[in-house]
Length: 91
Image 1: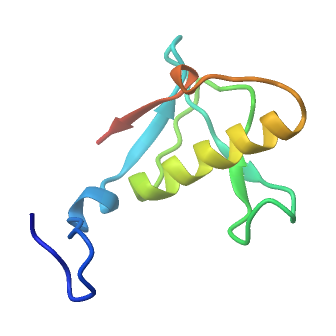
Image 2 (image 1 turned 120 degrees about the horizontal axis):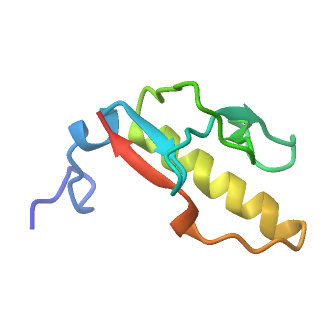
């Protein structure tokens, strides 16, 4: 296993820079929206209704971060949503 300077496992940065879109099982595309202030400093999560028009995230890390914020927000509201609802399609 390759380690970085701090002794932690090395993660290839190219893996996180890939452009991608988040799709629903029906093939519709999720778009970002502003998250509540108490959720995270980045302030991004996904709209709950996917649309037909396209939106491309500039990195897969940002897309996965938006998914985690959406799931965290919905679980705080008492709504359970599975990660199977979101497909990350890398371009």
